[in-house]
Each structure stands twice: as structure tokens, then as C-alpha cells.
Length: 399
Image 1 (cartoon, rainbow, N blue to C red):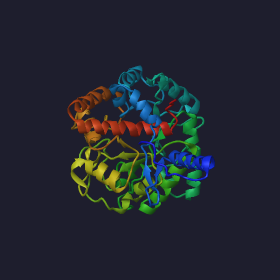
Image 2: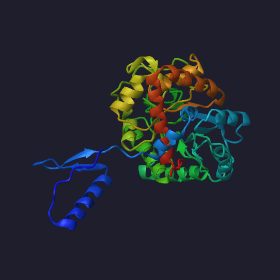
Image 3: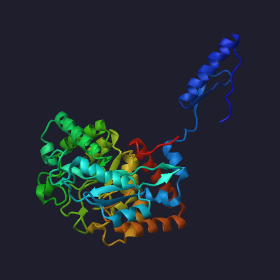
Image 4: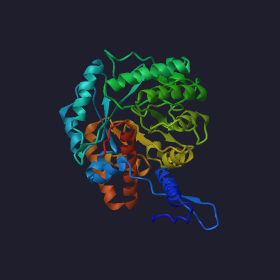
């Protein structure tokens, strides 16, 4: 905006210096004071300064931008050269370490550093990769060996005091950080009723839940996330809007349906609390929730992602999918359809544990961008959110 109007003052240079000093202070705060004759000065917001994410985005090619929408899986021990070549060719901006590794922190760090060396550059500066894994505990702990603690399952973690869990979670996070990782695809925020227990195939069967009530799951997912936040490693609350009420596992079963959960169910409290505490990532389930949106899987539902997660719960971070690469729940859709429908519904980052699906997914997104202005706008917003997360993780450098 133009120079603010300043009323005449008395007192010569000292008064002018005071006024200029006040103006400088106000502008530094992102506001400018515009006095009106005979009225109290009103505060008008100025345009926000460009962020590092904005600067990087502006320097990217379209292919580089689209690549930021994907997280590709590679083996935690010895990533295949074919998978790495695919991720680099399509400018994939995030990586998930998959499988199981007992190699320890030092060996894992060497693997991660090798993967990072292939990251894209913009303006001569590397756009760092986000590197993640599944490090929940119990049967879901990808990385182990020297330097990594043996993490008990979440149901056991849920019996600890929140202060104990927070302290141990900080230790686990520091171990991941030492191994070069930025993001944990945990905690599980699903509430499995005690009456369902291990009959709940995706969560209860593996004791991945922190407890059987919203209160326990809320307090303990919060403690887990807080410990990671202290150590500077990001977390992911999953699997929104919850897999606690289903029988089938979306990884291995089609037509998994939750006919219980509504948009106001108490089982959503762990997600809502995590979001209020600043959760940077939320993962979307691939089940169908008939009392929220009976027409779409959650991963492809604008009602779930935009109306419930974004609008009602106010989530401003990165919305990541559950696996859309080889999960049976989405097998009826082509890889291109999976990516396009997830982004179109409001998702930001497509997770595929199967790197070979990336080319078709990227091509599908690019084809949709070519013919749909609204979709292009969604892509731009999503890329900005991903880059903002990278900046927060220290993976972007500007200026």
C-alpha cells in the first residue's frame, strides 16, 4: 500500500523521529496505522511478506511442484536403484522407509544421506526431502538395531503416565533424528472399543491403539506427539476419521465400512485435540464412513477432508493419504484416479509404498491440471503446505 498519511505534529525533529519510530515498529509487526481526521487511528493489515516456501515455489518448474505432492516408499535397508531412479525422475519430494531394518541408527543415517543426495535443486539450492517411516512400537516399528530402543505397542504405552510417555517419546524421536528422519507416521489416534478389541483387524489385532476410550487415546497421543515435538521430529495423527469401528483392514481388504462414526462422534476427540496442539500432518483413512459421506472412501471425500477436517476442525497442516500404492481398499481405482481424486478432495500428499505407481499418478495429476483450473489451484495450495512443512523441518534454505 502507499505511504501512510501522517498528521502534522509539534516538537520539530524529536517529534518526527518519534513518529517515524512508531511507524517502523508498527510496520515491523505487519500493520500500518492510518489516522483519520478527528478519529482514533485504525489498524489495517498489510500484505504478508513472502515466506521461504513462497520463494522456493516461485522458482520451481511445474514438474517439480507436482513432485512435492508425493511420498514414495523405498526399502529401509537397501533401497533399489530402480525405485530411487523413479522418485528422482518424477521429482518426488518425500520418502518413506518401508519394510524392516535392524541395521541401527548409523547405518540408517547412511542410507538416508544417500537418498537425500538426489534431491532437486531450485535456484542452486537443494529442496530437501522429507524422510519418514512407521515407528509406532510393537509390531509396527520399521527401524531397530543399535541406537534404537525397542518400543512397546501402543496399548502398553497407554498404561503409562503421560509424563513417562512424553519423556520416552522424546528419546525415540531423538533416535529417529539421529538416523536422519524428519517425520514419524504416528501416533495412531483411532479409538477401538473394548467390545471390538482384536476383532478390529487394522488396529486392535496388532494392539496399535492407546486405549479403548477417547479420553485415554487423546491424552496419550498428545503426550507422544509432545515428546516428538520437543525433539524436533514431526508426527502424523492417523487414520482420520478413525479406524477403530471397522472389522476389515484397508491394506488387505476392499469395501471396509464404518457405519457408526459421525461428524460429532467422541472418537474424533484425539484428532481434534492433536490439531489444536499443532499437529503438522494428519493421515486420511481409506475406509468408507456411511454416516459422514456414504458415496466416497474417506481418502476421496471432500466432506471428510474439507468440511470436517479443514473447516470444522480447523486443520491447516498437511493432509497425507494412507497408502494408495498397493492397498486393496483402492484397488478398483487406477493409480492416476487415486492421486487425482485424493488431491481433488482436498488432500495434499499422496503416499504410495509402491514407487512404481508414481509415474502414472504424476501423469494423472498433470493431465487433470491441464484441463481444470480449480484443480490447479488445489495443487498450488497443497504444494505450499508441503513446502511450509519442509521449511519448519529445516529442509528449505532461502536467501
